[in-house]
Structures are given as C-alpha cells and as structure tokens.
Image (tube, rainbow, N blue to C red; front, top):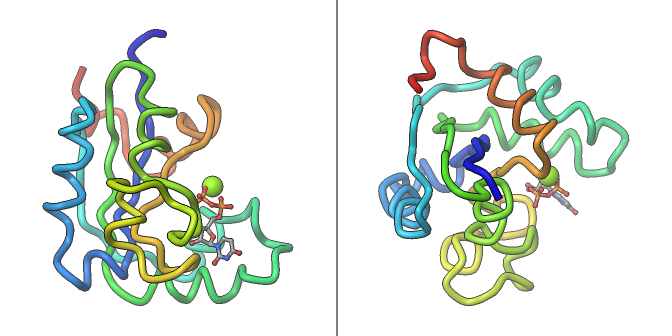
Length: 140
Ligand code: UDP
Ligand code: MG
C-alpha cells in the first residue's frame, strides 16, 4: 500500500472538552503525520454541503446543528494506508461498538457526538481535503 492522505475532523464534542491534543496524539502514535491543521467554525450551509451525502438520513439536521455548535479542527493526515489506518484509529461510528483504545471508544459521547470524522475512500478523501484546504496550505 502506498502513502496516502486522508481528511479528518475533530468534532465539536471533542474541541469543547479540550481533547484536540489527545486525539492528535492518537493519530501520531498510529504513524499518521498531521500535514495540515486549522481550527474553524462551520456555517450551516457549509455543514450541509459537507454532509450532503447524508441529506436524506433521519439524523441529518441534528448532525449539521451539532457540527456548527462549536469550533472544529480540520486536518490532513498522511501515511502508509492512511485512509484505512485512520478509520481503524477512529473506531466504529457508535462508540458502544468501538474497539478498545480507539478514539471513539475513549472519547465519544454517543453515535452522533462521536469526536471525529474520517474519509472512507480515496475519492472522498480527495474531495474532502479540497473542500477545506487550498493547494497553498498543503506542503509536500
Ligand atoms: N450519525 C448519527 N446517527 C447515526 C449515524 C451517523 O448521528 O445513526 C452521525 C455521526 O456523527 C457520524 C456521521 O453522522 O459520524 C456520519 O455518519 P457515517 O455513517 O458516515 O459514519 P462515520 O463515517 O463518521 O463513521
Ligand atoms: Mg462517513
């Protein structure tokens, strides 16, 4: 597997509880390098656009309201097999199902307020990175 880049969000429940550093440490311990990072607060329109794939799901409105409720930290992670590795470090969507040692097992509050987002495939990783970062912000 080659070196990949993936996109990550440290979500409002985690920034609010001052967990940014502890979550970043999980990425670094897993061999993922944080090659870009910024703290921002989404507008409702931006949250709806980012999660557009879930627009028809029953949790969509609640998810978007949650994602704009506090600042978030958006990051680009790089490493060997980064997309799958990040999903592994994140753990299952529902923290009740997440494996021990994963971010969601240790920090998530619920299936909605689950501390992190991570891209699920190379295509979505490229789209999500481009949604938040310009080429100028991405060093080689
Ligand atoms: N979500 C939710 N209820 C659900 C499923 C998902 O509130 O029943 C939220 C949760 O914050 C999740 C996000 O919607 O992280 C996106 O869902 P997805 O299925 O893509 O999960 P993920 O890829 O984040 O594990
Ligand atoms: Mg997803």
